[in-house]
Image (cartoon, helix red, strand yellow):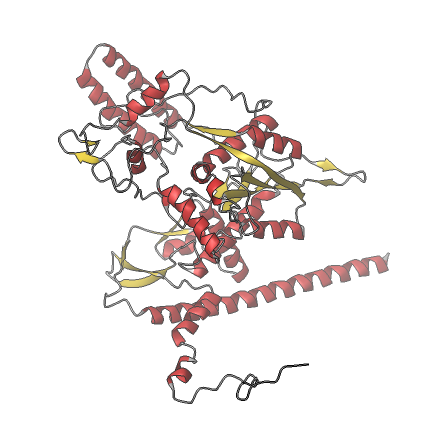
Length: 590
């Protein structure tokens, strides 16, 4: 039996949303904004929404014109079209180098006689400098150093890569007089040993032959993660925040790039060939960094897990177990001593060199932190030209257009508190040997000065948006595709020109006052001068006008490109039909 409903409290049926009165403020606010539509169309056509106005001046005629250049942003919160363009270039770079069956880079060309003579002259200068030092003829050492600098410039101008030798340490140089500190390379007792082979000069993996005689060369996809800091929930937050090791999580995130470099070094020594990789570093849901890599060739999964378990990175820095100062009580700068001192006693803090000397003199010294991988190592094979390969490339580049902190949005109070606790630990974690946070632990960082602000280091590691990932997030080995990102941009331009039937040979380029660089691209002569135009300059139009001009130009380009694609497809179809008809006529004649 249902209870009777009181008068006036009967449930009412839901009514549809009332249509705003024409001319009212609600009706006006419901209309889309023309500026927003303009930006949406610009994003649809791939037009940069934050172009840089550059003024180009012809030094011969004095003619000036303002040209909009793309901003080149790699984050979609700054410029979506430029970020998506960069993502497509990275995908092309990964795709081109993943399943290569030949070496991407040829060997260097033989040196010319002029280059050899410069190297020989540089050797004579080095010998003369050593004799002058032995004889304490310091005025001659200064003259020889100047001559060495001139010869080094001539060597670089002659077309040789790299340096013949490291620069000499002087009083004005940044190098320490004693040179780089060296630690023992003996492996830790708690890390398994790895076989070490001589690394061959090849980057191509193994080729497999099927029973029917066909050959194939698969590659791999690898995921590396850090160790656990405590149990976490499905949303990435710790089960017990008080027992979650935020300090180790912050230090691991700050030194994760060094651990990755050590992993690839160990893997190459273990496998005996120059393993190539391309991948991206991004945070997990628990906000700890992990990396996805595409590997050229195949490697047994057991070897990958063994190398990951045996890889570590030791941080030989002063101890940070005790934080001597807080953000409310900081060291002070002593102008007379030109050093940071204790606010109570006025005694200068230990310098960076003194702190490292104490570590060297202690026979039982231990590294302040050791970074290791976790037990989760995911590896699988990928065949070239399959949907799985394209899907993996899209997955590797999934978050490269986002900030690290935007990969996993904090939507609950528990997630926001977890992010705050990690960030508070990152704020006081030293990032480099010059980090201002060393003052919190009673140590003056390297090259300390009065501008340092303890607890407010400007390094990317301490920012809330980076989650401790302060280095490069896109990691691509040197011999992956044999090309830089600029080379891949040039390949895209060359493909478009070939499709449209336009060329930029040396004859036409010389007529227009242009040069052809070593990559085939046209470069302006010195007759043009470039400068950044100010937004309030008279010849710089409003941003909306500039966007509309760029959209119109891009729309025409797209129409011409689609028409060229259709013509190429039709020509290919006609050619195939002609060949098929000729083959059929030949068979009928026989």
